[in-house]
Length: 450
Ligand code: GLN
Image (tube, rainbow, N blue to C red):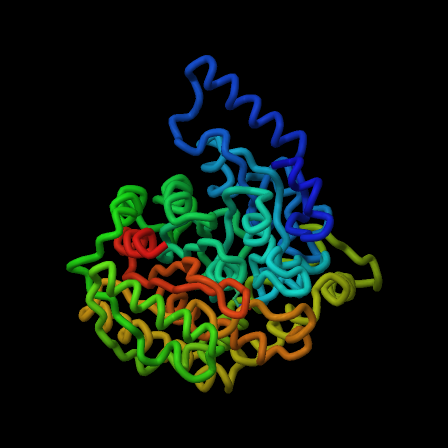
């Protein structure tokens, strides 16, 4: 895999940091362990992985795609990082991403764009475009992403790979640099559903270091994925969300989706139409809640504690302002301003408060729909991968990418994107959504469909 990285990553630019020596040392340790019978019991021992550069790593820099963290060496490993290490998984390096996970194309990275291996003039999606591109270009068989509004599922759809957003609280956020804490969730990325399930069980589960971690067993997703590969979905009800998949979706994406529905029926599933009337307000609510949390979370980059420090001015305030001015990119600044405004006194009730109410209505839509169906489906994204440069200056067009993925984050439920053929020569993703902690049935359906 390191040879493959050397051969193709000059063009793809999936990695921000390749940890050649650490990766070789980790692989050698697993080899020795296998020989001595002391290797970790994990089936993934020795398998290499690409880690999104938003999880802290003791032995590698961590930038979150931002200049403000250039050169920062974290003093601790994220829980996800340490669980990967304990399973004997070799971390090849850190992958490119939109700055602080804000974006849908990886073009908002401070370290250059990542190219989609299917067509290098196009984006791989975002914010986790680096992880998805590493998988699609065979630089790594496994990767980790984070999904705040779609950043695992949308890149998976754009690159023909599998991406899973676990139930909120299912994977520890300890050592995950925060974008929006009530929405962020780390998850597995892979080329097959079973690979994603194996990785899910490694990183998932209770962590006392994360106060929002769910104190329950990780759903047995590997068993569910294996069951799914038998290809029989009889007895399962698949909810087709009326509000997702119609107007505003590329014709090829719609055609692929209709084909996917027929396929699910052939596998024995019963299709039921469900309505989630508040999903149409999801995007608007998300783009108030997310910036609000961002404006608060990113206050910690104060020139004193981490990374960049621009020593300009006589006071702490001036140094802080100069550092944030130089260190944050335009999209991050836009969101900090939006969030500060939405939270300001006099506007709080009209914006943030109202958005939180919409969030509750979306959760109720999900609850009602899951009363009628075991899983819900929709296209993962409205379009296939778009050309680099197409939307970078048009934030609203960029935000529309997340139309179908955002409701899941607002509700804290689980969802994944599984490859669903091609439209106009480019990959399309089918989104499968499940109730909180309902990952098993979601993996089963995806594995049967794959
Ligand atoms: N594209 C969305 C945004 O820009 C989602 C980001 C994410 O999931 N991290 O906020």
